[in-house]
Amino acid sequence: MFGNKNDKSTPSNGVQAASNVSNSIVEGTKIEGNIFAANDIRIDGELTGKLDCKGRVIIGPQGRVDGDVQCTNAIIEGHFTGNINVKELLAVKESAVVNGDINTDKLMVQTGAVFNVTCSMGGQKLKPLLQKEAKTAN
Image 1: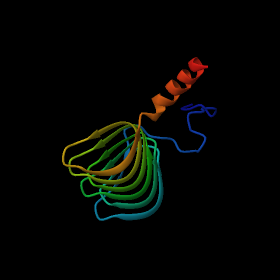
Image 2: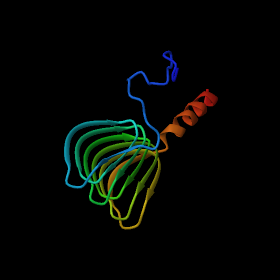
Image 3: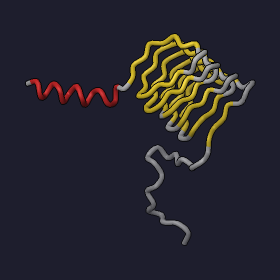
Image 4: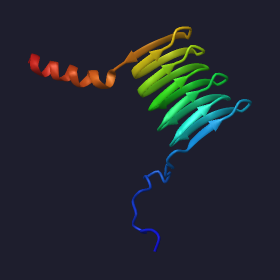
């Protein structure tokens, strides 16, 4: 009556993302381990481990992340140490302290940020261009 039993809208992992919902790790909270987030996540506490987020990751001014992060977009205002892979835009604010390896399509770093990283940018668009050039050279 209210839904179709054959509805295939739930992803294969069984987790259905709700729109306009975000997760939050508040100040004073410490987490050690791996997190999977189907939606945006804001970290104002501490995370040591891996974070796989299908949306945006925000590390607030009091937030600390030590580990590996994979996400679509990210804003860093606090401390980050580790490896981060951002599919679209990484924004590093003036209060941020970032150490580690970064792979992103686009990068914005504000004046005043501490930014000690190895960074690879634009790899998603560069690979097809290199392949096209290699084919035309032959």
